[in-house]
Length: 267
Image 1 (spheres, rainbow, N blue to C red):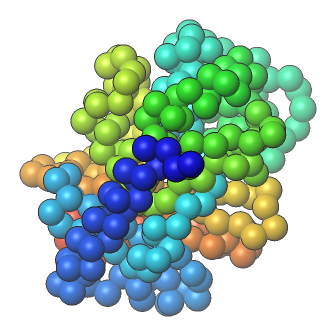
Image 2: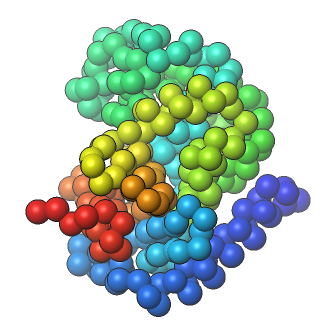
């Protein structure tokens, strides 16, 4: 049986793909951003109203992949909504175990854990939230395929949860519009956590993701840019063959935003 949310996502994806195909004929060549670097990947850039779409590799953009740490966007909202974390000031005490990144090896708050994708903090939150509660939230908002998997603390990293680039765009627009079923103050906190850069020309809010535990790895860079007159949403998904490839997620995105004239080309 196909859930209503899944069917709606499929229809939305087909509509967005058609819009992108029509727009791409007038767009700069974004495919070359991947071929120049010798990697496979896709990017979708959408205006706030969806009237203008730019993209590369639409087939990949419509396929679902593990969200990795981009799931922290929704995971943070769920944790706040369920009271699994009291707020941005709550301190998560490091257990003394050395982990993947040195920055993870210390006490954390949401403000520190979110931008560095501190896995152990969100695994602790997962234990507090529980699988049934996750499934309730995933289905309520129609996030990706709305599945978790057998392992509560890794389902967004190695489990069954998957989402497409087109669905990431749709979700981010709901974040921006505050139309998700979460408290306004929680959505505003999330937007603070997403803040990457603020200049006179634009504000960038984004999140990375990387399935570093898989044999065949991929990475994400998703978010949105607020300029003085417009808002643009993006979802970049790339293969990651070596650690050095991880930098291409943001690098490709920023160059694409420059090529399309959304942000200025600064030396």
